[in-house]
Length: 122
Image 1 (cartoon, rainbow, N blue to C red):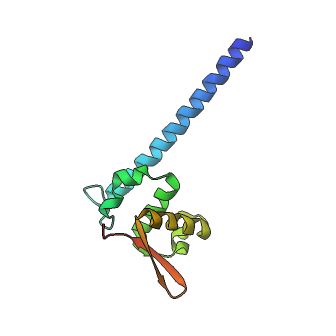
Image 2: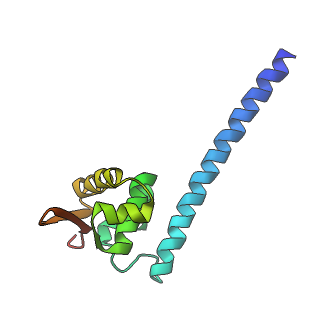
């Protein structure tokens, strides 16, 4: 009886891991579909070469969502991005600053506001 319970527990863990992997694959496919809607080649017009489809897919999910939102907005504050992603402004500010440090985005201050935009110079 104990052997069966142990096998059942391992089977459930394996199925849960498979489910998680399928969810991650589905999210990545959704990103690819969204990108393809913007351009026939699969890359949005405002996306720099440094931030191509493969780069987007290599980013962690949280940064990818932020990057795609900013690409759609072209130039925006952390607050504007947070309205798109439905996450807190402070969270988006941190993610946007990470993308700036990574070289995918640029940051420009206009008065008290910081605007982020896609780094097209690469």
